Image (cartoon, rainbow, N blue to C red):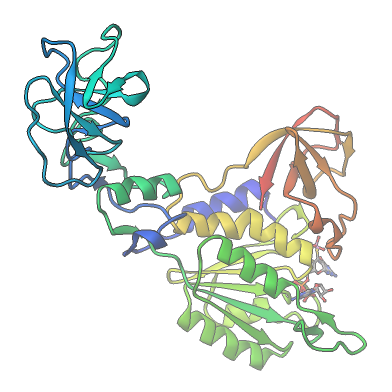
Amino acid sequence: MISVKEAKKILSTNIPQSPTHKVSLENSVGFILAADIHSPIEVPLFDNSAMDGYALSITDPKGFWEVTHTIQAGETNLPVIAENKAARIFTGAPIPKGTDTVIQQEVINREGERITFDLEGFTKGQNIRLKGSQNKVGDLLVQSGSLITPGTIGLLASVGIAEVEIYKAPSVAIIITGNEIKDVGTALKFGEIYNSNGPVLNAYLSTLGIKEIKTYKAADDPEALKSTIEEALAGYDVVLFSGGISVGDYDFVKKGLEKAGVKELFYKIRQRPGKPLFAGMKDEKLIFALPGNPASVMTCFNQYVKPSLLQLLGHTYPWQPTARLTLSHNFSKKGGLTFFMKALMKDNEVSTLTGQESFNQLSFGVSNCFAEFPEDTEEVAAGTVVDVYAW
Ligand SMILES: Nc1nc2c(c(=O)[nH]1)N[C@H]1C(S)=C(S)[C@@H](COP(=O)(O)OP(=O)(O)OC[C@H]3O[C@@H](n4cnc5c(N)ncnc54)[C@H](O)[C@@H]3O)O[C@H]1N2
Ligand code: MOO
């Protein structure tokens, strides 16, 4: 058995580099940019008004101006404004030749077409957004490796970029093992339970932007499992198993993976829950066999599968905890195993919840993270800072 740290190290050093591909800007949010983006245009493209008001030449001698034109945002045919004349102008509208300043309408006295204002406090160029003041053609806008946020989307759309290069999301096969597992929407017979791990894994993958997902169901039978493993490995980049990885007489996953030529990265971690986690590779494909208990599936996905997938997707620091928060209560555990506790983070504190057995899912209705208690700790006092991992 290896430690949590060792398992993460093994994964992070073995995960291959993902291929990249081009996607439309609107489908790129949440992904990592795989190439630098330089601006194809300068921004703003033309001098324009930052206010609704009047464009005029502030050094005109007379001290009053006559409004001769109106310029709306979007105007393409600009007039030339003569000396001592002004144009009514609106925010975003191009600045006409012959003017150098925009005065906001609130400080203007207008009588008929004649305008005046208190010149004090105004300087030439005020309220004009100058051409190229944000960026010039060719300037670096976003670096390769950056997360594409809604803000990034706005920036790139504003310079007319319609497609971006991102790390390609892997396709994922989920293999649900267990004769007792039935899908929701069907009636249960004695001894059967609903398949909750399948929906959990599908939902978790979709939060990471992974869309190509196929769910297989495999009976606890070596032959059925073998053909499902072969099909999944042939068609998908990542294969996730739920259940069948422990030591019971009907746990056939590990043997099946060996037969399919999957190379073991590790099996069993000094942790609770999720001790019998298996990770392996075949060529560039990643395989995780998640211990079937629901809390083990959630923990192992959160701690190992999610960061591995994020690393594949080009994220730079996927293995870090979400936060380090103070524990709201005393906590005690036995040494020798890392504990991942269903927990609630709130007001900069974290509290573990009741119902920590690995079959018990009740606290997932309120929990928003796991709190980690390392293997060498036993008594942990309230106020101690602990690592927490949001979903
Ligand atoms: N003798 C030992 N027995 C067990 C050990 C051990 O070390 N020695 N480890 C225990 C631990 S820890 C875990 S975790 C489980 C893992 O077992 P498997 O991965 O083989 O999982 P299964 O036996 O197939 O199922 C475990 C449990 O989870 C339920 N389950 C399975 N699939 C689903 C699903 N899709 N949705 C909801 N619930 C599911 C299943 O009915 C079982 O109750 O092994 C322990 N045993
Ligand atoms: O991994 Mo097991 O979940 O400790 O029951």
